[in-house]
Structure formats: C-alpha cells, structure tokens
Image (cartoon, rainbow, N blue to C red; front, side):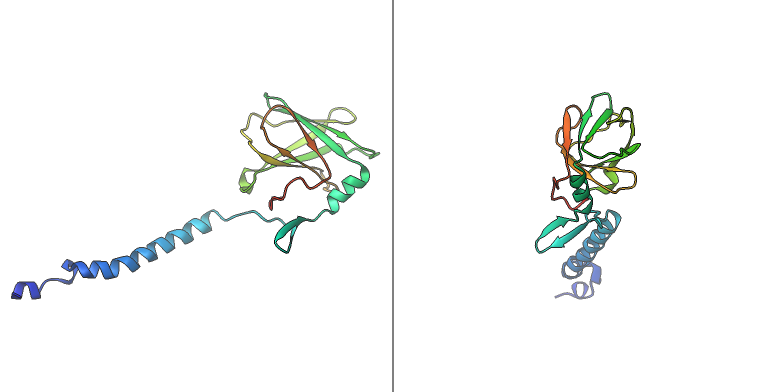
Length: 174
C-alpha cells in the first residue's frame, strides 16, 4: 500500500457512502412520509358513527325518526345541472328547505352540499351545476337535521335515485 492510498480523504472512500448513505436515505424517506401524512389527513370518521366490534354501525336515531314519519324521497338529476327531490310520507309539516350532501367516499373536501327550496308541496329544486360527481353517498335532511334519508348515486347525472330511511352504505364518512 502506498502512502497516497493510505492518506486518501474520507469522502473518497466508497464504504463510507454505503454505510452512511443507507440510513440517511431512510431518514429522508421517513420525513417525506410524515410530510405527506400531515398534509393530507384522512377525514373518514364522523361523530355520527360508532364502531361495534369489527364493523362500523351508523347511529340511526335520525334514520329511525324518518322511518317513523314514513319519509322517503326520489331525486332526479338532469344533465343541465338541475336536481329535483320529491319528498313523500305521512309527515304533516314539510320544511321550506332541504340539504342534500353528495358525500365523496374518502375525501371530505370533495363533498358537495346542495340546498333545495320548495317549489311545490312535495317538490324541492336546486341548481347543482355541471360537476363531475361520480359515485357518491347521498344524505338528505332538513335544515335542522332532525331526520335523515340516504341513498347511493351510482351513475352521475341523469336518472332517479331513491332516498330511504335505511342505512344504504357502510362508508365511514357521513
């Protein structure tokens, strides 16, 4: 071994980079993971749900009241962005306004809230626009949130969706 090989600088040794590089890359990857996780936190569980064993059961007090009142609804959407809800049931009092939430399966910031106003005795109308909705859970309730109806929008615009007092989805987002 010559003197020049023995006095070589530490950063020119390949083993130094191998030994220090692998743990350093793990630290950088860990910090990147923490940044990603804290920037886009999940919003999947709402206060309206409770976990029972390995399943998620929906707190059904509002659905039970809708069932007691005999409420159900049918929502019709047109391609031009108008939605009509026909509320049926034996409820004597019809609210002046209804809220319909198009719940995204995983991202709460992509939920769409539509406020319906009464056009006729049992018909409510709202202008939603031409948004790309995709598959969504639908939650219909009056402004005070006393009762609740739910349904699943499978096909996007066009067609009719039934909203009932039963739990239509096991999603953990309201």
